[in-house]
Length: 83
Image (cartoon, rainbow, N blue to C red; front, top):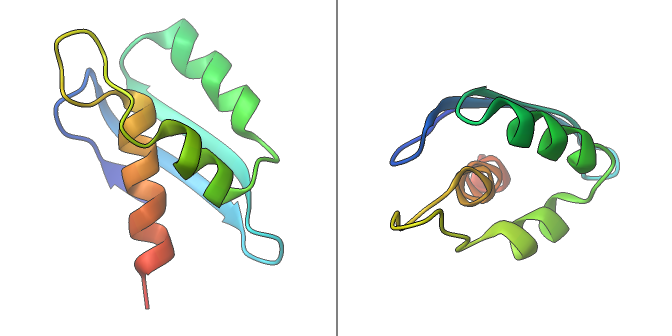
């Protein structure tokens, strides 16, 4: 799925979910802090969607009201709510 971010340095988050066991197969942040995004992407592989939402929902970045992890949580919630 492709998610257009808002209020953060990254422009977009692409991710793939294994729907048979609700785990993350791949996450790719476009733009933003390259090292942090790359490290975060590696850590997320194999994690359950609900666990990531729980941990990342509401995380802020400096003075911003959101962050790249929070944007991922929002994207995963949107994915979860799809028909």
